[in-house]
Amino acid sequence: MEKTDSSTRRIADLKDDDKPREKALTKGIRALSDAEILALLIGGGVPGKSAIDLAREILAACNNSINQLAQLSIQAISRRFVGIGPAKATTIAAAIELGSRRTASADNVTVINTSADAYRYMRPRLENLPHEEFWILFLRRNNSIITSSCVSTGGTGATFVEPKIIVKQAIDCLAYGIILAHNHPSGNARPSGPDDALTRRIKEASALLDIPVLDHLIITSSAFYSYADEGRL
Image (cartoon, rainbow, N blue to C red; front, side):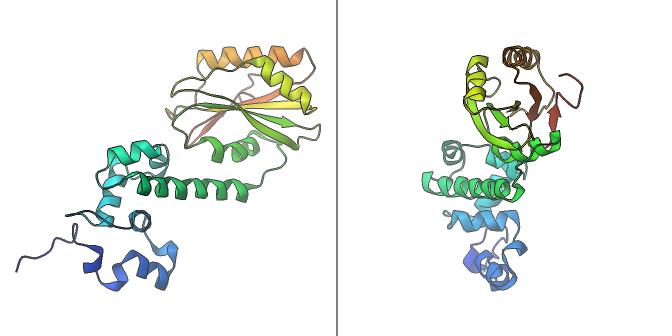
């Protein structure tokens, strides 16, 4: 009888200790690899491929990076991988989003005293996006956060921001100061020429109403750039 290749056999063919669900029940969910957790979300495989095979294929295509997987839209996941339809792609995206929200809740940053504080607050909101978003943090005099707002959503390389909208929102919530933040999906945290120009425009507009720009962060999945830390404000 032909021997089954362990890389393509069905989950049902595995020993109980190697089945993701049984392994999670006996050893805890943290004992599972990324592929095994993803296989649980996928649920079932296709002819010739188990759920674990599909999970490994997806992770390999994303350089075994959950952050890269998180950057894919539901539509992109379902189009790119055979055996992953809209329902399974939605389940994967929902799990990643739940993890991001859990991280944001765990950080629970309410006061911004350093660029690292602002990064911890904004990172879960921006690090995995496949497109650019521009956010504003509105602060009280003691640097506690009044609220935060996404003021613009753009493409993969740029987003349009209107300074007067930012200033209006700052006035409406009686902000003492503001922090600008946007992401670079490319992974390069260095500011571009347009980033510098936009920072100057917003700084000049808000200064007319005595609302200082305290910092501007550029966020990627692994790093951030702070205009304040670099002495550029």
